Image 1 (tube, helix red, strand yellow):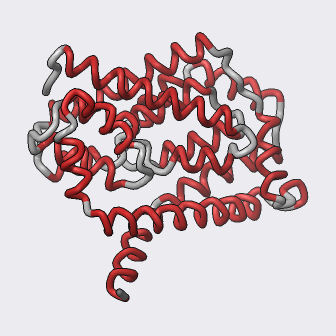
Image 2: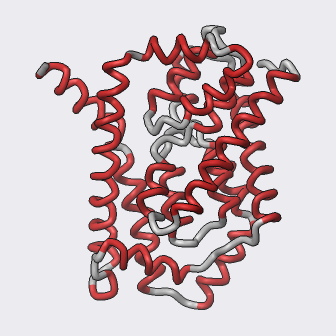
Length: 286
């Protein structure tokens, strides 16, 4: 029993410890804007927001889920648009890139897969911002401080950023700890069997597996695809939805907008499933 607990705790720390720098950077950025906001800064942020889905799609393709966590906090502070957030979520590669490189997959194949994910994210982001008026308002950054009662107005950006980082990181650790215990008890083999035997519903199941806020999700999906157990479309659906712990953070920092959070999660699921179904129907493969 003690060995099981030690294994889960160590695994949880491995999954979460790398997020600390990303969390600190984004909160320091938000606090700096809150403390030293000017009309010039506002103009720059709003101008950058118009190209947000493109920048989000490209930067989101970087390994690990740190950038998606950063984008989540920026969206909650209304520094980036909804389209930018969705673009980042869809393009985030989490552990996929590392797994493919470790398996010595052809670099051109890896590039094509990343390109497909990135393009889906960018296109979806621009469409969403075109249909839903982009909302960029740095005044909402203040709301994050009020919700956590950190007395940000009377403390330095550094102190406030440390407070927010510690609070959010603790939430991530607790959730990841519970998920790791569940995955360890059930076993990855059980998840693999379900996805590989789902038939025409595979993209749907893969999407919901991808939503699991844990690196195991993208690892399982990538391994199944490389082993030939699932099609590219099925793998794509799960990998598009695999934004790590980002959506969990969304429900934490944007907790007064639960309806908006559910709409974002629904958009992510629908786009992921439709993309996977389309690729399977067209027999897309790499």
